[in-house]
Structure formats: C-alpha cells, structure tokens
Length: 275
Length: 313
Image 1 (cartoon, rainbow over the protein chains, first blue to last red):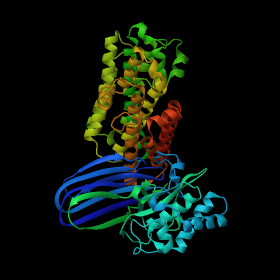
Image 2 (image 1 turned 180 degrees about the vertical axis):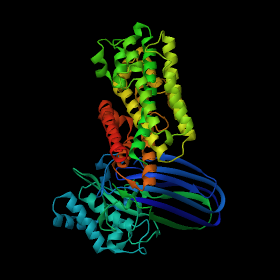
Image 3 (image 1 turned 180 degrees about the horizontal axis):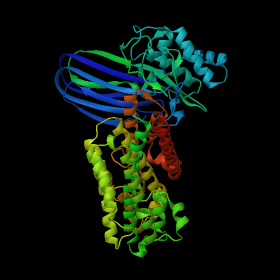
Image 4 (image 1 turned 30 degrees about the vertical axis):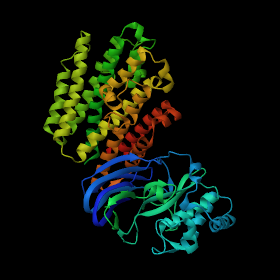
C-alpha cells in the first residue's frame, strides 16, 4: 500500500522565541515490510538540520534555529510503500539484543495491578508467547476506553491501567509493561496508521508496541486497534518507551507560553495492484 | 511498451556496462602484473581476472594456460567468448538496432560508432601501450553511451529499463570483484599486510575508480575493511552495492508508478536495498564476508530473473 504522510507541527509563541533546539524523530527507515520512496523535512524558519542516528538506529534530526520568531512550523512529508507482513518485522535495524528490551523505564514500570493483569493473561493464555501477546492486545482493546482527555504524555502505564482509559501511547505502555513483567522483551513504536474509515486528518501520530517472539522475531501489536500491525502501519521510531521514540523533543529560550498544534494527514496514494 | 522493446533496452545497457567492466579489470590486472616479481606473490593475476569476469570455465575449455596473451585475447577480442568486450559491443549494437526508434540519435550514434570503430582493432594488439589505449577507448565508449542516454533520453519507461540494465550489471560486477578478492579484505589479514596487499587493495579500488574517493571518504591509508565498507555500504560511492540498489529500487519504483502496478521485482529490490542500508561492516564480517557476497550475487541474479519475468518476457 502506498501511503502519503504529511505531519505538521506548529508552535506559536506569545513572545518571540530567541532560540530553539529540537531532536526530531520523524523519518521512517526501511525494513522488509516498508519502503520509503520519498521523504523530506521542511522548517518555516532559517535553521540547521543535522541528520544522525540514535542508539536504536532511528534517524534523528537535530534542529537548531536562532530567533526571534513568533511561529515555527516543521513539516515532514513523504510517501511510504508498505507490504502486509502480518505484524512480523524483519530486516529492520537491530542495534541491541532482544533482552535489552526487558529494561524497565519510569513510564513503563509495572505496579501490582499490571503484574496482576499480566499474570491473569498468562493463566488464561498458557505458556505460548504469541498467545499471551495476542490476549494482552485483545484485552487492552476491549477493556479500555479510548479517551484523549485524562492522560498526557507523562502518564505512566500504571496510572493509565488504573483509569482504564487513555490513548494509543498509554495502551502501548501497558502492553510493554505487562509483556516485560512476563520476561517477554517489548518495545515502543511511534509511527503512523492509515485509518480505513476514511478519516484522513489525525490529531497526532500513532503508537503501538513490538514484542520478541522466539522463532518469529519481533512482532508488532497494536492494542488500540486490537490487531497486529498491518500494511496500514508505518513504523517511524523505536524506543524503550514514549520518551525514546517521541517525534519531537527539545527546548527553547524566550518565547513565553507556547501553543502547539499537530496535524497529521495520512492518505493512501493512487492504488496499485500487486502482481 | 512491448516486452521485446524493454528487453532490448535492458540488455543493450547491460552489455555496454559489462564491456566497460571487462576493460576495467583488464587494466587493473595489467597494472598488477607489471609490478616487480617480488611484489607479485604466488597468485596468477590473469587467472583471477578470468574468475572476476566469471568465464574461467569457458576459458579453460579452449586454453590450457592463463597468461597475458591468452587472457587478453579471450576477454577482449574472442568471438567465441560471448562476454568478451567485442561480443558485448556486438550484442549491445544488435539490441540497439532492434529498438532503434526507442533511442535518441545521440545514443544510436554512440553505440553504432563504437561498433564501427571496433573493426579497426584486430584480434590482438601489437603492444601493451596499444592495448592500454584500447581499454581506455572501451571505457570512453561506455561513457559516451551512458552520457548520451543521461542527456538526451526522455524520462520514461525506455530510460528506466536501460538504467535497470546498467545497475543490475554494475552490482554484479562490483560483487564479483569482491568475491574474487574477498580474502584480501578480511580484518585478520591486515596485520600481515605487506606491500603486495597495498597494491592489491589499490587495484581493487582502481578497478571501480574509487582510489581517490577512498581518500576523500576515510582520509586514511588503505585498510581492508574500509575498502569493503566503501564498495558495499557507501551510498555516495557510485559503484557500491548500496548505491546500485538505491538506483534499482528507485527506477523500479518509477516503473511501478507509471504502470500503476508492482510485483516481485520491486519487493526484492527494496528488501535488498534495506539489507544494505541497515547493515554494518562489523556485522557483515561476523556473518562472513564471503557468504555475504555469495548471497548477494545470488540475490542480484534473482532480481535480474524477476525483472525478466515481470517485464521482459
């Protein structure tokens, strides 16, 4: 599937910003299931954009701009061709052994409730890793309410589990925390999802998780949609949790209060038959 | 476009590229064999030239000994060898004539001119200097052909199919050089590297016009794993495997976009491109350089086959 992506981040400052430094994790890489045919990053002000690779192999851009400016817009735009791989992620950059992804982070630290939830899944699903992961995905999908209000980017997995509601990021964090508490390596994936209900403009990127299954390798699970990743998923960044894969992190001097608005347009490009 | 037309365009470009490559390895071999015997070591460079050209078996069916005279005659002029420089230019011209109307005037002139001029050279050349001039001429002919395609062809499927031919052939050629010389590039080899190795490494780089590029990229003396890195993984290096696959993926994508349809060729090219993009030299050495190159050559042939079935047959 050819997917067009336009991801726009707009900052408005009530006083002019003097300087802005940001780390952008906005550029997808290729693996067996996806191929980037076109990709570019644009900024609305004069700036430096240096490309590097982080420890996980994500492409990062270090963005620096000297003000003053009242508004900053960063647009990434491109096209990715994806293949259905039933969630199995092969040929991706792997800089660490899977066991590294058992490491806990503050956002994904399991509390009693998460450990209990994971145990419960394990009792029902049995010892098969794949069955456990599918059941976690299914339960998160059915027992949780998708709600953008109560949680923020700093909400931990434990807090979200208590609320029983949250966004894709929270569900991914709970998934990761639960999987890791069962000794299954799991990691956070930031990316994009082409919705098949015709909604093109989304408020933010999507997030899901990958877990390591012996024999199969890394498999992507999307608890928000209750499925394994499909050809509608475009994988952009990998991390231990949201902070490691966040699309934009940075700081600035000056600028007073900022208002941030994000618009993501995801659309299928002209259909192509597979032959 | 008819499959037959696409097929001729693809093979025309492949044959020109192959002729250039043969000239390059003959030149590099000539250079190595003119070194003092003390540097020359045990190996017979003419034999390894045959192996790099992939026609050792055909050669030994006709000749018993690989030396300067027999190998240059076989690789450059023999008409019984279907991939000698002469045969390549002839096949390229035959293919070009079949699709004369799909070519620009400049391209046709370049390839037909080369073919006419080829007759001026006999079956062997009187001196080494004359032979070196001939090799230069082969490379210049390929440049002229490539340059006129680049400058005059409309960017449509006809152009893209010629590019596919160029890059499949080029990837195969670079991989073959690495395949024959891989033992010189293993990291353990460096500690025992003497003057012979220095000349061997520089010959490898020279055969793909990368000696200057090497110094620009690494700013260091010749180190075998960096030579391998340059020829396998560096996108900036136009004859590296990574660069060839960047282009193959790109032109296959152009074709897919124009035809509104894609298939195994696109998928295979992308997977290989991704592998090259996501690999690092130390990982390749760990898995075995020889195995990696062997797998690559097989995969590249497979892609050639996929392109043939999908578009050319």
